[in-house]
Amino acid sequence: MTVTTKPATLAAATALAAAFKDAPVRAPAVSFEFFPPRTEDMERVLWESVTRLAPLAPSFVSVTYGAGGSTRERTHATIARILTETALTPAAHLTCVDATRAEVDEVIARYHEAGVRHIVALRGDPAAGLGAAYAPHPQGYRNAADLVAGIRRQYPDIEITVSAYPEKHPESATVEADIDMLKAKVDAGASRAITQFCFDNDLYFRYLDRVRARGITIPVVPGLLPVQNFKQASTFAERAGASVPGWFARKFDGLDDDPTTRKLIAATVVAEQALDLRARGVDTFHFYTMNRADLVFAICHLLGVRPAHPHEAA
Ligand SMILES: Cc1cc2nc3c(=O)[nH]c(=O)nc-3n(C[C@H](O)[C@H](O)[C@H](O)COP(=O)(O)OP(=O)(O)OC[C@H]3O[C@@H](n4cnc5c(N)ncnc54)[C@H](O)[C@@H]3O)c2cc1C
Image 1 (cartoon, rainbow, N blue to C red):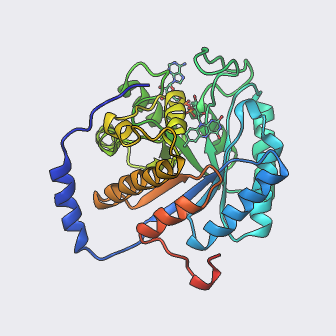
Image 2 (tube, rainbow, N blue to C red):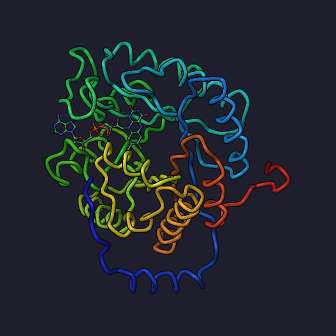
């Protein structure tokens, strides 16, 4: 876990926030990410969350794909239920890990047949676990760019979203090498990127400047992780190669035995992050919901995202 200090950009952020205060208020676009449930209880929690968030009219809701295709059937079942039981637009995550091209193509064909027109195309983590070297399947797609090209070749009508890493992917030697991969994915047909979560907005904006300088013009949507507690956030960050700023860690100092205060602080932290992004001009947000609606719903409310028909809100 890397601990950094917050750069002094408060004055700039405050000036922008003041400018934004008088601008016409337009709610940002949002999307929500869920993971496929493993048990009946988790299934119930997921659908309560989907039902609670649906009236916010997200641009799409995405469903993750477990390591090595371990959730292939559950991801498909969740996507199918979203298609048949809601008016939401689903996006199916898909990885290349441990699968031949033919196997991956079959998954894409099933999605297309079911009516899915949006895929979040990823390479995935090494089958041997994080830290191990990634080895593509000998007959498989080599990486996310190769997968994007494969989808685009077969289905011109499928929208393709890819990953982006403001603090670089742990396997990338440099941020520039990382942006090379993003460029390859865009050249292959991706039309949107969602970032790995990142707790320091300045890192996101610095990364965005470098991405734009490379001539990449697609939306690079910040992915927000509404963490419920600091320990969980630190674990996720360590796995994802994201840093935990010193000021972020300090907000949770001394709260190890006080879960109620910890939860309130966590809510404040992510609300501050979202409002700062908005004040600095971000108009599209992706939420890693962890299948929980309450905090995401509250932050959307703060951002001005309200139910399309208030009476539908649970
Ligand atoms: C928005 C989002 C959604 C995700 N959803 C899922 C999911 O549903 N299921 C899941 O299992 N994982 C998911 N992940 C995690 C993702 O699978 C891992 O981060 C994985 O390690 C990389 O996949 P990728 O598509 O980002 O890879 P790529 O875009 O192919 O590569 C990522 C980076 O790694 C570097 N790289 C790749 N190959 C090499 C190499 N051979 N040598 C040096 N550098 C290399 C590149 O510089 C590149 O920038 C998600 C991540 C994000 C940000």
